[in-house]
Length: 258
Ligand code: NI
Image (cartoon, rainbow, N blue to C red):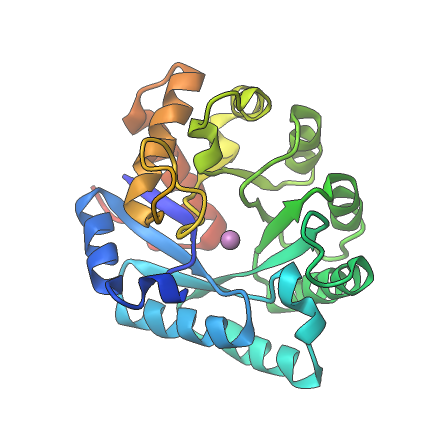
């Protein structure tokens, strides 16, 4: 009934109990988890985890934080990994001007380079945007051969959401929607049509209430669905089915017969 469209099962936080985490998700009605690599090492691991678990699919790409480490061999390896059977998206890529762990110039160049690779591969992209809303939208508008994708953990305002919808992107809502005083995000949820919304955990980060402060895990995506349902005046199953259908369409996941 749910898809966690963005988690990081490959991170070391899950080394101890990864199988249990996936099992709890399945038991909690999470049909699919997309696990998103952030470095070449983590991308390799994400693909291996997807291979080992029927419900897990992978995305590969270099996170904006890690773009300064990109060298000539990085993209060769990513293109190879991207052709693996269970890889359904390219990402996460984008801009993070909040932490600036790589310089804005390097982030921008590598974002554009990776968008071109995704277009060549014919894969949808998973976009990371933190404190770089204007620049992210401008780069996406210039993206030749766009294959579409999703703005993950959306943190812009309703006007930015409209720009992204117009470009054909999905908007993904993460745990912060369950936090107090998230008025701007609630307005985004109200404005974005149900057929363009995804839900995600970004686990192990961004744990939704009432578990905030603990490690996040894919099973908790149901809490985000519940909050989205409440904001939109819908039932939880309505939100679950619609966002699952959207994720299946975007990532080309297998459709389960009822
Ligand atoms: Ni992430």
